[in-house]
Image (cartoon, rainbow, N blue to C red; front, side, top):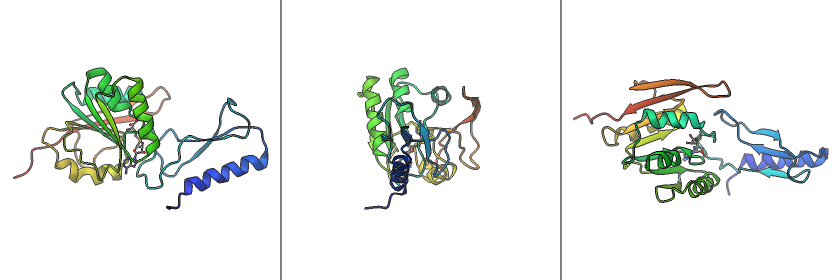
Length: 219
Ligand SMILES: C[S@@+](CC[C@H](N)C(=O)[O-])C[C@H]1O[C@@H](n2cnc3c(N)ncnc32)[C@H](O)[C@@H]1O
């Protein structure tokens, strides 16, 4: 079994909570901005008995990117920028709660596939697809994005990290020419985007959306 530092952190926080007997509930949550190795301990509303430790996510220790959901306004912009339509096949690498493929399926009837290494996210995404009544259009797979075959995609959606985008470049270049690639916040190094946009979310944070097309293969 792998050593999972998050589990130890959670256990430590739990032990601390019990020792202090503060009467509050401790929740271990994700953070709002992508930031490696950050665990936030927040005080939750007391809807559950005092001293209950809520672990909403036991994060696999081999994740390349932490979970941070894309704000819905940015999801909408990503789909608009990539001109997603009903005939597309959209892949979201690191799909989180599934909001990008699910929104595309709901809005345009797009077929979508989400891949996430974290089984908690995959379960959540499948439940969200059920609630949105789009299980005939989208599916969520547990797996490593670096091992996933996404060559059937006509649109690739990403919200990863700069170095992960860079590692994906060779595989993106093997995709069908014309495949649209849209990325939240992070660019692709020296690949010049065809379009880009700066967006402010209601919390005042500035986000970026970038768009490229896979070029014709060099002879
Ligand atoms: C920043 S979140 C983006 C979630 C979603 N795409 C969105 O925009 O709302 C990144 C996601 O990538 C997943 N992830 C991290 N490393 C991965 C890997 N090697 N393979 C597949 N998924 C991974 C995480 O579990 C997390 O859900």
